[in-house]
Length: 385
Image (cartoon, rainbow, N blue to C red; front, top):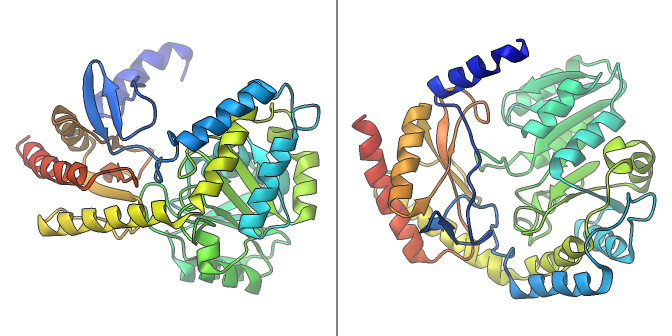
C-alpha cells in the first residue's frame, strides 16, 4: 500500500466497523468518569483494586515530587536509577521470590525487550494463541522460529516440544488472559517446560496484585517461571512494568536489552506510588471486596440469562460476535450512563467482538445491578437491528 492509500484503508475500517479513535474523559481512572458533561459508571478500567486514586498512593507520589522532582533524568544505566528504583525492585523480589528484578516503561516494552534480547536465529518460541499483542509482535520481529498453540492446549504444546530439535526453547503464556479473563494452565506449562529442557515466561499483567494473595498467578500455581513479567498499570494502579528472573538473566538483559538500555527510567513519583500501591495490594480487604463483586456479577448474569465466559477474574467478557452489534450494545450502555467498551478484531479473533466488562473493588453492588439491567436492554436493542 502506498501512502496515498491511507484514506482508502481508513474507509475500509469504517465500513467493517473496525475504525477506532481516542476518547478523552474527565475525572481520571476511577469508578465514575465524565465525558462531555455527562457522568458514567466505569466498567472498562483495569484498576481492579481501586488503588489508582487511593489517598496513600497519591501522598506517596506527592512526597516523591517534593523530594526528587518529576523525571528521573536519564536511563537506568546513566543517572536515572535511584534508591527508589532499587527499593521497588527489592520489594518485587521479596513478593515474587525471584532473585532480581528490573523495571521497564511499559509491559509492551518489557515483553518486546525480553524476547528481542534472549532469542536468536535457530531458537524456538512457543506462544499461546491468545497471548497479548506485545508478545506476538515481539515474536514476529524475532529471528527465532515462532509457533503458536491452541489456547491452553497442553497436548498440542507437548507435541510441538517433542518435535523440536532446537537448543533454546522459550514457552510463553499469560497468567490471566486479558481478553477472555481465564487463566493459563501454569502448573502444566511449568512441568512441560522442565520436561523438555525449555524456559517458561509468564506475562502476569492481569494477575499480579490479585491472585496468589497479591503475589500473582505464578505464586497461586506454586511455580517459579524462568522469566516473570507483570505490569503496574492494572491492579497496582500506576504505570510501568517489571521483569523478574535469576541474577544471570537480569544481568544479561541489563547489558543487552535495548528497550531498557535506551529508555529513560520511570519517573520518581510513579516509582514511589507503585511501592505504596504494591504494599497495599498485599492486604486482603481489597481482594476480598473484588472477589465478592465478581461473584455477585456472575450470579446476576446467570439469573437473567446473560452468557459469560468461564472467567473468575475481574475481566468478565460477553461475546457478541459481530462488531456492529457490539458497538450498538456499547452505545446503548453509554446512553444509560454505563461505560463499557466494545472490543473488536484484530484485538480479538474474527467474529468474537465483545463487551469487555471489568470489575473493581470500588464498585458498589448497585452499580452492578444497573449494569446488568442495561445489558439486558442492550441485548434486545442489538437483536432488533
